[in-house]
Length: 96
Image 1 (cartoon, rainbow, N blue to C red):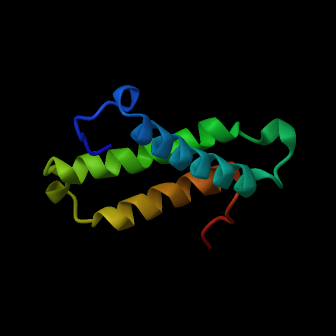
Image 2 (tube, one colour; image 1 turned 60 degrees about the horizontal axis):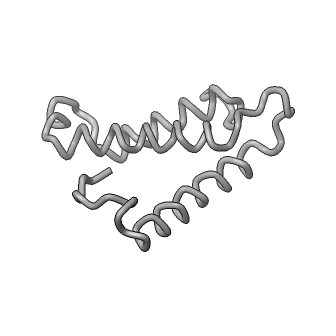
């Protein structure tokens, strides 16, 4: 996400830590959606990938300097985006 220039394929420890982080995201996705009916539950890997992609997008927006074109700080953009996503899945109640 932060363009370290290191390839996980060439650094076993980095690959191990990346896999561990990915596992944390997937377990969180599983736990958040476990009460949804199986037919309406997104695969945990897809769910976690969406959250990762949204997070990555916010980081990229602000790391490249384009975030100054929005009146919202990065943490608000991320929180709002994840909230919208979770409400769409039925995991959070609609705003009232």
